[in-house]
Image (cartoon, one colour):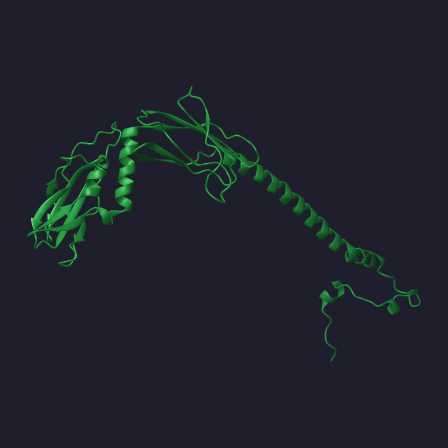
Length: 281
């Protein structure tokens, strides 16, 4: 028995070859010209496009680098160089940290003072300006103003620094104490006693409000009286004939523990100092 025909088959399109289409048996198939034309340009278009992109990127980076270089040079000139003050018997020493390549440094005191050039560096093998100078002895509170010349010959803006001699003196002496804590105390045998010297602390007393100590493990609660600091004096840390610099303790004393209170109320770390072995001090 024959299989019944599905009516849906009549609705499906029938795909026929050229041989099945009347009149097209001997006609050649068309050549896909468009496909050939599309493939051919790809052989040169990709390398050229990549080279063009690389050129654009290179030019953009070059222009950006020039802009950054100009911006950095301008920022270097406008940046305020760090300044520190160090007290000495001859007055305050001003140290300036200049940008690399600076060629000159000048300063003046106050808005109307005359400008002074620091001159060339006196350090062997070091090029550039001298980066420190002395303030006059007894210099009072003022505005220190600086300007420098960079490696391109451009002058920086004028930078102003407030100078307060009492505070700078205290800060300078505090740095001395914090940098050399091993020198706070010294021991000396004296007959059946031991003398404990606080000479370094007394010399830098402008940085201190109080000195306290304790012996042989005791907490540092005993005050050591110090003379008042005179910031305006020629030698504010000088030790006079009657300046007290030491205490007498029993010869058996082996340690002293010291704590400082600085001029601004801050306290130092309590440090313990050991007496040398018998016969070595």
